[in-house]
Length: 423
Image (cartoon, rainbow, N blue to C red; front, side, top):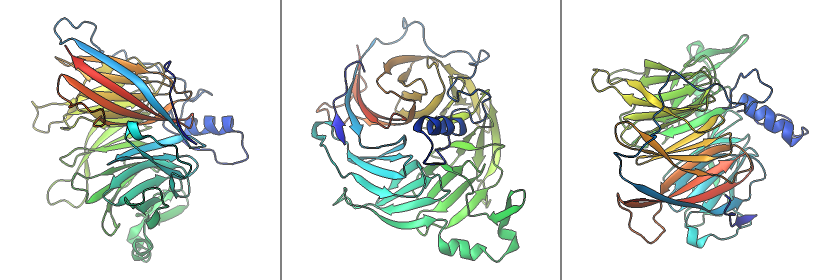
């Protein structure tokens, strides 16, 4: 296990360990974010694109600043023995979660990549579907319907982390146990207290101030937890008609959820209210919504689905509610969009076509595809990116470098460097 130089050419898990890996991969992809209810036997087969949505990809740069890009794969991080489902950046480290329940830690400095035979820091129950870090706490979402909180030790980052709590906590469950009003119908003949997720937890997100943790699940709900005592404060029951695959938060507290029911829903908790309520439903995708990402200021929402398109939604400043409206679509991927990330004015997209694409926002709502990263041998399931502060150069609007990390069903993580120069 370790780091290999990358050549220049560059959603349910298996339910029985006795099944062949190929069968497990097909089952996972059929049930997870790649078209949950596709009639096709090939779950990664793309759904039709969206001809009614105009393309935002710029065909001409006559009125735009000339841009040159340089990109290459710095390293391939090997260590996971199963699909890489989740990535999270925290300070000098990258965390990765996989379908074999394992969480690993990697150093981020490209000039100091070291081979390590012991970078596994945590082992839960069930595939690790999402990771977020808050100070000395690492939150992990799992297929076994639980959220785990791990104590991060920055002085000894490669030692095994202690599990601080499993959500819902024992005290939280006990408090809800004896009142009938705390029970909700989860199946035809089964009830459960509202603090429990009853299916795979697919996404996690932190509030702007770090006081709240949001979780989304294939059980069609999203829940809100305190990050101090880990109590569950709220549960949005039957938030969607099918599994929720993605959840993102804006800086002003608006919640966006994307589901296999093809819808994106917008939720807000108004002052004086106890619960979030639905304020808008965004319907344009014709297949399962797999990924969501927001621009830094929250004015633009990006959504990726099995229809191979990334829809760009922009806030309608002319209306009092400031709801999102369709601006257009980014097209280029040949299979389902599985993950999205945004840094500054760049959008990063990973796909079942095994590539990562980089999009840059230009003038008058136009976008250009700056680069296509090729090298993965399986679908790209997760992405994260950040400004490259390790390259020895000062980043500016005219010359900037980025590090992009992509996790794949080929069990590998690739580290890419992208440099953008405006001439």
